[in-house]
Each structure stands twice: as structure tokens, then as C-alpha cells.
Image (cartoon, rainbow, N blue to C red; front, side, top):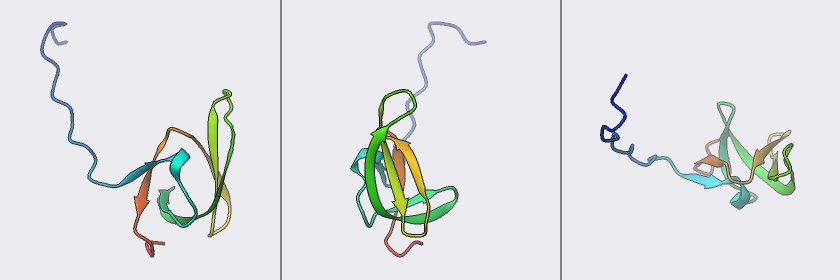
Length: 81
């Protein structure tokens, strides 16, 4: 076990991949979800299970997913799907 007053390691480099907060996702964005690239058809707001703000994303490919508004989602290039 390390000593309690040792210097902390340096922070990791920021991700080189583009991300966007779930609250800022718009129609046409391409997002990595469950190992696939999916295109956002529409978004709506909802309450999460603990009462916080959530974003419901409906996919062009069918189906939907709910994300906490502050989650960072991985963005892809249009045509990645």
C-alpha cells in the first residue's frame, strides 16, 4: 500500500475521441452505443429513476435508450452506421 502523503499521479490525457453530453445530443448525431454506431432520430427529456434529468434517445435504426443528462456519449462521423 502506498504512503498516504505521496504525490498523486498525473492526470491522464484527455480522450482523443469526440464526446458530447447527453443533454446536448441532437437529431442526426451518430453515437456509439452497445458496440454499434447509431443515428439519433429524436430526443426527449424525462426524469431518471432517482429524479434527475434524463434524455431519451430514439434511434433511426429502431429502439431507444435513456441516458442521464450529464453522461458523455461517444460521437462518430456521419455515415459510420
